[in-house]
Length: 57
Length: 515
Image (cartoon, rainbow over all chains, first blue to last red):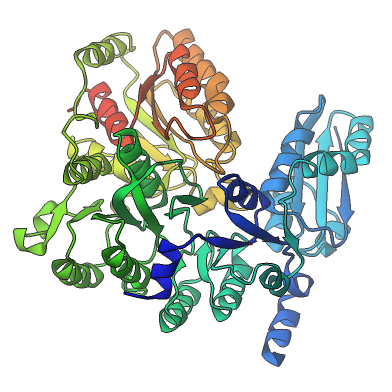
């Protein structure tokens, strides 16, 4: 069975971490390649603005 | 009493980081209460609840940092807030992960071979981030809670179309190819694969398999609602397919709270066709539901699932404790003999939601009525989560306790308060606490609570009674927290320590004169 999920289970995981920085550090400690995305609430946390932007895109 | 606050516009930090800052500030002499949080609507309400109100705070946005302090003097407040950069930088120095990207797209350009997104942003934004990751072809581990079931369904359907896996939302733990995601224990690799809709249940299972000398191929968390009618087990079925095909997995174990009936029926049909042995631990489901032809070995408790899995993997019976030793039985009897006549009830103050559930199952089977904020049956629900009635077990990780607060697995403050509250009640005979080790959990969960445990015991002694304190530890010797030291600290404080939630629950039954 050659599926994307099988690839996840059988290959080395490589992570984009969006959120808690501590998660990234602990995965790095386990030898995982991690890129930490410096996340902030999109559109400054303005929900209406965010919806508008998402609809435009 | 004086109070003050500082707002830093457009300075965003994650909740675990802010908790560390809060803890450091609150340790300053003369400081009575502190709040270090982002300006979301829920957080601003928390400030109002502790009596901090100001038009500037009301105007703060989710990207703005708010630091508020209540202290004995104005001087202390000014000193604490004036040193804010010192607090923030002090923690940041040891905190930065080595590779940083300012956006998801930049992250992908740095690491184009990334295959999974680990998402732990506030729930209101989590579905959006997960969608972006799926669109980019990444699997998702979605730790965030407070994601609507509509969003969950949409994400999982979209993932299914793309052949991707969504673990979560509200997914506490997974082990993928030996790597722990979220709250995960350090366990060796082996031939036992696990799928779990119950976060701490999956941690308990994987830790115990390790402690029995065996190993885990993968442990796939699905999120707590995956086996509901609405979601229909989309992640569970995808995980079953994958573990069936995975050459490292020889045995498959499912751990979950009760699934919806229609989902369970479909699950049983699928299990019948699986070419590998399957063990099912569906807490709260009657074993009579499963016939011999269902193709599934049914385990009533997580301990039993471990025993079955270890046996299927070629292990001899014995490594997982089934009953109390003679010495343990004597200790339990001695504890009961010291009690005063008014001491009658159990109070369980738990960090693990699955533990809260499994404990209720075991105590109910022994004929003990248990009230809870996450009850087995609605009639046993507490009127208010903060007020125990007779025998009560509280899930301190419940949403009610989580608004703007860290999970009790990360920080013991909320449990400490609850233990002190319970210790005022002369009717409490047994206090039960769980301690969960592993990545991302508190580095010293016992150290956070041990003085409070001693105080609760002391209060009981002063009243002429004796409080029995029972603890279960979920973890392995390879976890970052030094399991042996954690256990030693508990024993030195006179706590009865067990290595599983099921055994600790059985000890509680004995201490209440049942079982």
